[in-house]
Image 1 (cartoon, protein in one colour):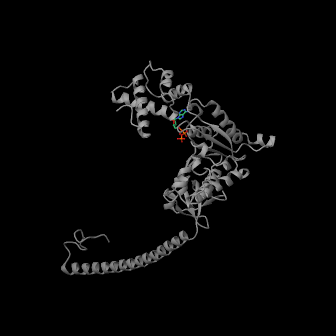
Image 2: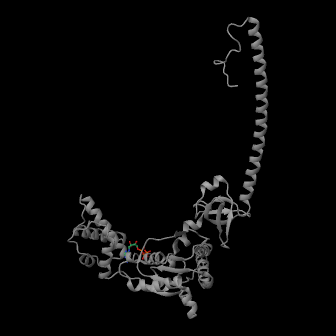
Amino acid sequence: MSDTVDDVELPYEETASQQEKIESLRERLEDLEDQNEQMRDSLLDANAENNKYQQKLERLSHENEKLKQSPLFVATVQEINDDGVVIKQHGNNQEALTEVTDEMREDIEPDDRVAVNNSLSVVQKLTRETDVRARVMQIDHSPDVTYGDIGGLQDQMREVRETVELPLQQPETFDTVGIQPPSGILLHGPPGTGKTMLAKAVANETDASFIKMAGSELVHKFIGEGAKLVRDLFEVARENEPAVIFIDEIDAIASKRTDSKTSGDAEVQRTMMQLLSEMDGFDERGDVRIIAATNRFDMLDEAILRPGRFDRLIEVPKPDPAGRELIFQIHTRDMNVADDVEFGALAEMAEDASGADVKAICTEAGMFAIRDDRTEIERQDFEAAWEKLQQSETVEAGESPAFA
Ligand SMILES: Nc1ncnc2c1ncn2[C@@H]1O[C@H](COP(=O)(O)OP(=O)(O)OP(=O)(O)O)[C@@H](O)[C@H]1O
């Protein structure tokens, strides 16, 4: 069957008579014609089969399209194993073992959000672009900040721990005493003072997921979706219990009502109302704690501060000299600092600096050393870094810098 024109074997011996040769060739010709006939038949069969599969493929593609068009439910992949895929449906939180195509199976992994149809088969993986929640919420299952990374803020840390750790770790204490655990914490103070760090650290130390949402993004980026996203935020938190919800820049959604009646204001109002109602539904919230932060405490609507909502208000001020010294120590832990550098003196120098400023000074001091071809960071590097930071802040504030 695999003979080619060049390597064809002649069906007779060289010594055979002319008559025998003709006879052999005739037989071989008949054989080949038979084979040709058989192959043509097979080809026809294969073509027919191919057509059948083609039609089936079209039908399935059509079916698939139809499935995608009917309403789909959103679920999160929990586990992929030999039996199929375990998904957890959003909304009712129920888990189900379902099937996926081999192709889809290769594409998904635990924690992916997927769309499932009525029979809970995974139809589509939701990409980050289609997943608004993923864009607006930052979910960190194990934030790496610890209490030891925070300089100063001892009182604030104690209060945050009391309010968040106890209800998460010993909820029965509150049941026994017969009181509701404090609901939300509001951290207020200037930018860069460690508010986010406090929330991340308490989530980390209680093994809770950290779910962050920025109020300003909610209002400015996702116009018209604010209220729904707040609902989603609490839903995601329940799906990831125990969880700490961190709402940064809460003033963007909970500032005092203005008199103007623009549609933008109405939208912000709706978002805030949704937040209040989620906070009021505390009983069903389970192992979820809420921490919010603001730099504009004076702007907040009183409704948000009513008992049962944010009833712990914790001020997070800029660090005092002792706090700054600690923060310098923390941020230079991994740096190669010269022995004569005194952190106390640096703390005195960087008067009025926030924790974030201190961190920026340390990084910049390292850059000065690198520019100077040194591997050790000296006192003058920190001084130059502080000067540079002050200059950039002056320029940002629109004043002319003291130094060129
Ligand atoms: N008390 C602190 N101890 C150690 N580092 C700090 C402290 N405060 C701030 N920092 C440093 O500054 C960075 C920013 O801090 P963080 O995001 O917690 O500030 P924030 O108060 O939430 O700021 P914002 O109000 O601007 O959101 C931190 O990642 C950390 O490196």
